[in-house]
Image (cartoon, rainbow, N blue to C red; front, side, top):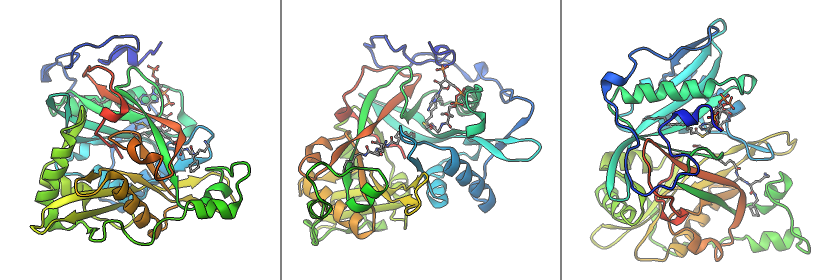
Length: 382
Ligand code: MYA
Ligand code: JJ1
């Protein structure tokens, strides 16, 4: 049983969902106007990510306390510039960057965020938020602080007349919309083995391994180049058209598209191919999310690229991602990570991906819809 989740508008694990739609209907009159109560030692704060010191506080909380793999060998290390980007898309609210500080010392010990997004579920576009970066300091775990953070962000989102959310997590809660897997493409096999991210299979030697994972030197799509502002209208149309194939997928305005895809050093890489009329025909993109390597003397950071949104129309998805691997290798990534959403399973085998040991569960808050296969998901959260 789930003392908290059983009180929330989400399907029970055993529910057989038939219809798509909201679970409960509320109005602004039903929403508390004052913040939830916190244990006396703590206070609510808004984290201003435009302030270098507050952004640094958030960075440190997450760097020391955010998501780890099952064996506690790696911990996500979102950079300050990544966090600023992730939290400030068009029409963001600073009230949705919620921190909890210790009153006496002002130490930041908790965080949760929401950003606005339009997500289509089956045939309906739903005005939602995406929830991310829920974190409670390791020393304050299992004291039921997470439900307070979740209820407070729900209240602040409801105050803007929004009643649905999407989120992902490594853990199973009531009730996943889809269960997805991570796949990994080694780019720096020697380092991955040294840090325990992968192991040398029996009868494999290091030099054979290095040769096996060598990437091409020339792009398959020779004209691919970085996304530029002038590509936006066309690229947005191409992406929205492509996303219409999936049962759960966002829709992007041109403004949102530019925010999420504009190339940003050490944050976002996006390449496009255009035709003779300068219409974008193909896109690949990935974000830069390193992990701290816990307790390794030689290597402190694992550089990982995470596949974002890709569209292939004049090439195959396989050749497109092969080009992404080449660019990621040039940018000195150690590994390229990818979920089994979209049509991604089409290229895993040919491009030498191996399945990971981590799952990613997709969730909707206050919206029920039948369980989806991972390949029906067209949404990527950071
Ligand atoms: S997923 C990333 C989450 N962060 C981490 O994994 C970082 C490392 N871990 C921690 O910081 C803590 O362990 C956290 C839990 C904070 C995760 N999502 O306070 P507790 C439930 C939702 O005693 P703690 C992301 O960011 C758990 O089942 N619920 O536990 C998306 C139990 O409830 P119940 C979770 O370990 C977040 C209760 O919390 C999660 O100290 C989406 C225990 O609380 C989880 N990842 O803290 C949030 N983990 O008894 C939901 C545990 O019922 C958003 N729990 O089983 C919902 C939509 C809101 C907006 C709606 C708007 C309309
Ligand atoms: O990265 C992950 N697993 C790796 C490392 C495993 C280390 C030991 N536990 C892995 N490696 C083996 C594959 C290898 C790849 C190169 C070639 C040879 C084979 O499996 C996993 C994903 O698989 N990552 C995590 O578990 C991190 C947490 C994932 C949940 C994220 C939740 C975020 C929520 C935000 O909204």
